[in-house]
Structure formats: structure tokens, C-alpha cells
Image (cartoon, rainbow, N blue to C red; front, side, top):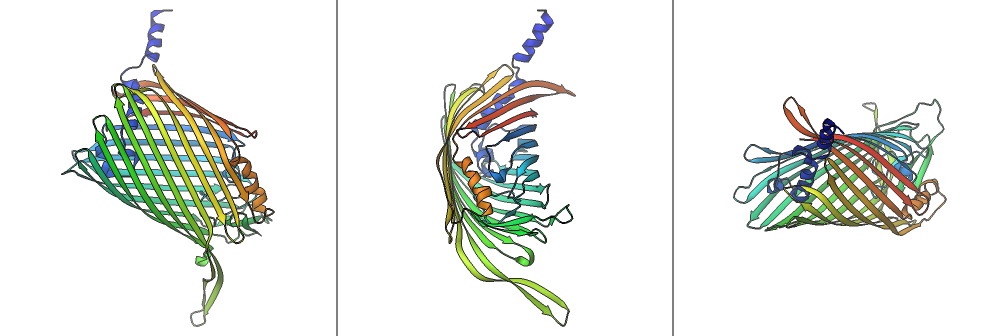
Length: 506
């Protein structure tokens, strides 16, 4: 083997100072705790700023382990970038941007972006088709440095999206979602107290429906919870709907630092009130939700070992009132126009109810040296518990499942390898319907039980290669990442994902 070939191989396999960015980024992600909250005032309390990443990602997913309203095969292209940056002497900023577009096949019974454990008053066609999705996510946050123990900050999360059905009846759902969060922290010695409040407005809208066929004989379904769905031939004609959700919330955080031990815990609460509006302000119902959260992030460094112990739990309780309304027409003979409005005749209080609990416990031990993590191993346990209930007639869907995951990763020269292996245990999957013969029951709820009742093994492997590039005198570290994910259930369902990313650290 000649000398030049040996030099090339050494350049590819031996990490340089600039090619170890993945390890430095991983260390910063592990040790910076305030960035895990929405409290922008805590940005300056984290260390190690002026870092960023940007990458494109191409992904393909397929398999029959899915729910009817999720669709099947999916191809996705996305771009993501984020940056932590000191701004002058007084401010610290964070910004991120994500763009994604995908096409999903064989999706049915759902023309909106949020069909599960949420507002029951949505719509869809029983004929499966392709759907195109585009989504833009923007986050901007700025916080001050400490002044007399205080820091202040504000954060904006902004999202717009578009979900379009490519088969008759053709719908287009448009999303506008923004959240504004002002915050404050106070530090005294080893203790930090943080507080934040937020207002969030989410509006999803289907302005109209179209068809390509001249005389399509198609049913369009309006859902009101569980198997209760009304199918109307040509019901898409003149159909429009919007969901407007106003949310107010607050969070209280407590941080503690002592030598090499750090912790940050947060309690949060949020209330949402969502209107469902149709033509002439028609209202099929109203949806109210309460969400409670607890998170605790803990870090301890001992020698070269960095121990992470994280806990996150969220509980949501929600209900939907159902309205029976009558169209009122009033004609003004003098001015010659007719006004339309709806009058509520009957209210069914809390006719549809949702309870949803998620909990996650994560431990990781990393080998940290020179502000870099080159090797780690960990385990995770997660609980997901949900109940959806419709009253009079009474129907319910309950499911619980547990996930156990082992994880590990290491750096081999310029290569970084990450792997996961996990088991999904379905501990409960019960469906009790008042009428199991409806179209929605036979085509959605009953087929989905095979999904909820499945146990499966899952594996994930990711390989990243880093390499430095100098452009116009500026040296930066680029990376190429390939990954794959596969799961196999005990009832012969499976799913797989493969993806490829290219990006750089900046």
C-alpha cells in the first residue's frame, strides 16, 4: 500500500479538532437544561453558546403497522436549522426553522391534522387516497444576562401547515398556530426560580371542498365521537369548517446547582377552549381541555462520567359539549336581504370525554472528555394511557402500552454510530361500542384494534460520517447520516423507515 493511500485513509478515519462536532454538540445537548423548557429567560443560565446545525433529510416509511386515519406509505423531505447565539453583551438568542413536505398514501376518514385524543368534531371520506402535507415551523427566543439576579426573556413559536387530499372529494386543511411565552428567572446562590406564562392560538380551517368528477356519488362523513358518524351523499358540497383553539398556560421552574450536580424541575398547567364553526357560524359542539405537566432533568458529572436522569409526565383531561342547532332565516323586507344564523336548541354537556397520560423515564451514562461525548449507553421506559368515551349511547376506547428501550452510541474516528433496541408491550386494548355495525366502527375502530393490541420488537441504527470542508477560507464540519428503523409485531404487522441526511455544524 503506497504512502498517499495510507494518508487518505488516516484523514478519513482519524478525527480532527473540527470533525468532532457531533460529540461536542451531544455534550451541549446533555448539559444545557434550560433549553429543554419554554422559559427563554433561562437561556443565559446555560453554558456553551454560539453553536448551530443545519441539515436536509429524505425519508421513506412503509408498512401495515398503522391506523386507518394515519395512512400507509410515506415519502418525506425536510430541512431543519437551529442556532444558539450571544447577541452583544446583554442578550442570548435562540432560533430554529423547520420545513417539511410529504406525500402519504392510503389515508381515509380524516381530512384534518389532529384526529387522535382530540376534538371529535371532524370530517373525512371513507374512500382512501393520497394526501400532501407542507409545514413550516419557526421558533425565536431571546433572553437577557443576569442583572441583580434576574433574567428576562420572551419566546415565539409559529407554525403554518397545509394538508391537501388528492382524490375526490378534495379537501384542503390550512393551519395557523402561534404561541407567545414571556418569562422571568431569579437566581440566589445555588437556587434559581423561573416563571413563565403563555398564550397559544391554533386555527385549522377547511374553507371548501372540490371534485374533479362531474357527478361523483360519494358520501362525506361528519364525526361526533367514537362510532357516531353521519354519512351524507354529496355532503361535501358547501361544506366548510374551522377549529379555533385558545390556550392559556403557566409554568413554574426550580433549578439547583451544586458542584458537579445540576437539576431543573418544572410544573405546568394549560387550559384550552376550542370552537368548531361552520357556515353561518354553525356549531356542532365545543371542546375544552386541561393539561398538566411535570418534568425533571438531572445531571451529575463524576470524573469522566456524565449521568443523566430525566422524568417527564403529562396528563390531559378534556371534554366536548354537543349542540343541536336549528337554522334561522330572517328576511329584511325593507332592505331586501336575508340573514342566516343558528339557534342552539339542546346542549349535551360533556358528551365526549378524553383522558390521556404519558410518562417517560430516561437514564443515560456518557463518557465525557473535553466537553465532548464520544460514547454513551442508556435505557428508557415510557407509558402511554388513553381513554375516549362517548355518552348516551355509551361507547369507549381504552388502551395502555409500555415501551422499553436500550440505547448506545460511540465514535469511531469520523464515524458516529447510534443504535436502539426496544420492546412495546400492549397491556390493555378495550373497545366497547353501542353500535358496532356503523360504517365508522367497521372501517376504522375495529380494524385499528389490531394496531392497539399488538406487541412488537423495534430496532434502530444510525451511522454518521463527519468531514471538514474549507470554503473561501472558512472551515466547517459537514456530515452525512444514514439511518433505518424496523419493527415486527406479534400479529404479523410490520413497519420500516429508512432515511438519509446531509448537513453541517456552524
